[in-house]
Amino acid sequence: MLGRLLPALLVLAAAAEARVENLPKRYYQLNQRCQEVARLLATGDSRQAYELFVPQFQKEVSFARFDSALVNWYRGRRLTRVKSQLIDVRGLGGHASTWVFFQGEPTYNYVYQNWLYTDDGWRLVWLSNILNQTMQFGHRDSQALAAVAQAALDYVASPAGLSETRSGLVLPDTVVVSWPGSDVSFRSGHRPVLTIPLADEPGRMPRVPFFFRFGQIRVLGNLATCAVDLKPTKWKRLSSLRSTHSLQLFFDRKNGAWLLNSSGKKW
Image 1 (cartoon, one colour):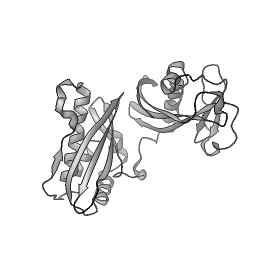
Image 2 (cartoon, helix red, strand yellow):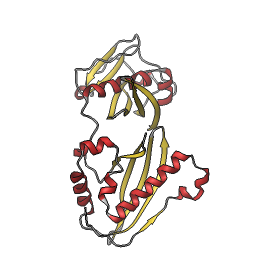
Image 3 (tube, helix red, strand yellow):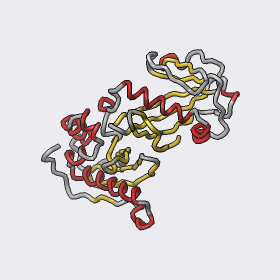
Image 4 (cartoon, one colour):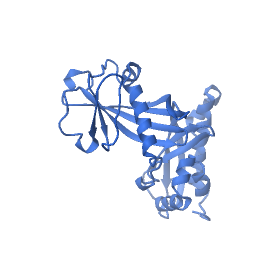
């Protein structure tokens, strides 16, 4: 939205800045980035906002598409106030909330910021309610996606990964994995792995207490992020898992292999 002029706006700092001297450096740096997003939304500087994103986003989503999405989000409305607050930093991931107030509207518009810590510092991954699902990225390399999924399964199916997701879980004798296609074979130690198509997931399940389903996977150069869901089956009485538990994982690519860097959010 080049040339867009907005009125003078009040950008409120997050409460976390009050005692910045006690915050870890990475946390403080992300907090500063979050406030920058608020300022750019206030001024309508779409070019600088675009340049905050990870390089893979800029490679796959043109500036024109991003600028158009931002214009559509504004819809000609006049901002009166913007407030951003850092939620958390977990592993290489960071998350923040932004509340945007438009003139004449009784309530705020909510924007969720998703960040990734890279070699170049904190870079944006997603802005909810501004970006749309046609602007997804990091999904083109199918072989890399499968390799990241295997690395994620290696961890979440291990004792450490299971306990981090939900204490008391025991890996079934047969590991069941849900995957969008049928062209990928997974492994899990010496246990047999049954891969079921995602479309058939609600159908008949083997007698196992839970199975693994991969959420969104993004390959971002030599970094990758993957969400893994542990979902109970109708045989859930066989384990302590009563509802879906999810874990976000971050990976580094070194010498052609994906290695676990850190764990992120759990939900």
